[in-house]
Length: 255
Image 1 (cartoon, rainbow, N blue to C red):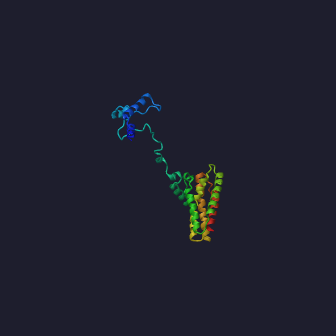
Image 2: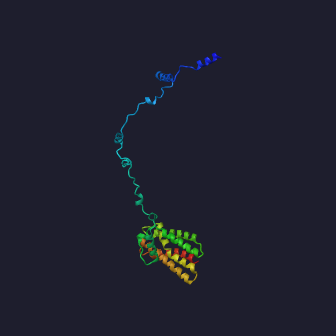
Image 3: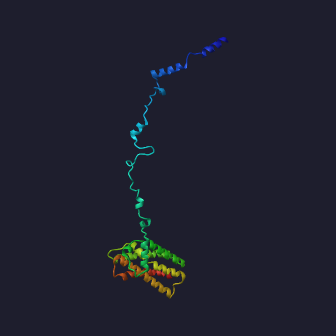
């Protein structure tokens, strides 16, 4: 039993220390390692030299703290900065001018007033659409649903007048201008349809009133056409087909 204890004590005793392990580690680095050199310790790495902050600031940065240098050399001014200020208003881009609409309306309401050809030659459809919808609305109040007939007769009538005016005038006219003039001259017909809401027009008074409105519309339209197209002396020739067209609208209103 004593021999076994002596064997155990001799087995666990050794002269190997931690210093020997470090020397063995350094020797392996000296003579080379099959896995390449190991990373040096932090104490063996070279320390960077101290550079004063004044040298760093004066080397590349010339501004001040919290005040960056000018960026005009890097960013050029955009040409779209003042683009919104120079754009025209939306109504002007859409071709809606309330002053011209009011002047055209007054020209239609007063057949004896001379028309301004520069204004009447514009393609303005805001007023004609408004008056056409108003005519359909007043007919609807009178119990007549005639929107399809109104739109169909308006399109076909404008197309016929466009062809006729291009044959009669030397300067020519656009389809939009014809539709604009004929649409503005529907305003007296809106007055007639408004009267049909309150009383019947299928009598002598209604017939006379319808004839007066037809003459009013055709006279206003022919006056505007001869002023815009320089067709002096041809007003009666233009008023006749206009009277036929507005007579169809009067038939829808009366009956």
